[in-house]
Image 1 (tube, helix red, strand yellow):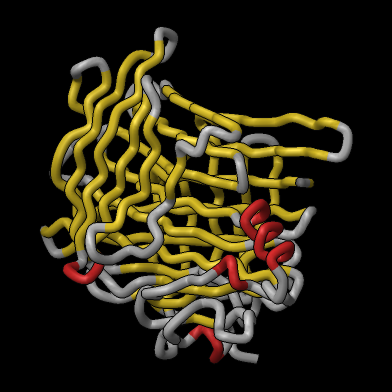
Image 2 (cartoon, one colour):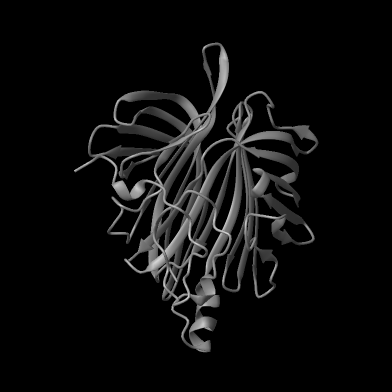
Length: 350
């Protein structure tokens, strides 16, 4: 068996993620989707379409890492639940600031319908705003917004983003039938992130990933996720890189359908299936071939956890340092030494 499935090779992107018969397409794709039509998934009746609207999960997130720290802002919607999460981890002090806004039935989160033609992902409230304007037809995006809290302080951001490399675009069959789509790309960064008036971007080392995610999760679901990206000195120049690894639970076909990969200046290389294990603050991420051997140490963490009768949410967003190596294409070794990264753990019964 090959280290990476032949199905991980990108194919031409179809017109829509859901076809005319209401069936999802699964696989790895070469270009962003122009249409998703997710409400049409198995929607033979109006009732099913209404249920789809309540079950559909969508989010778009912008993540930035530089020598000064790591930033994330996200516009999230699950049925009637809206979330706007903005956070910044200061590398020098180890301080994590989180601005988290959660609403029900207010309709404040509006993920972009597509990533083209200036379509926006938008969350607006009195004390928080995130707007992600997407122009992927010219390989660019803009992320703007703010969040204020008496406890946490104020953050304001206005970030320009220019796509650098090939995308990672995957449609995954959760429990062999539920479509979960993800697109991730690495970006050059310009602009500003200010906390209480202090600039928090180092413009020489800043890099970004935009994560677009949408689909249906079954009642019980979850995943482990890790990303690390930035710029490293090579031949006296700073060169961009990016790493993405995810272990989706309830996806029995992860060998064929996963989003593991590595970006360099102009390409994306698929990586083998990897498994996560945890011991205290350390996550170990390894594959079966010795091509991925990483240790991620959590330095700060944001938790959302509750268990109410038949419902449970256990979510952890962490910032930490990554050590170890990967082998690109099975032979080209790439090492990580105390690199700043982000990780998520999610388990839900909803």
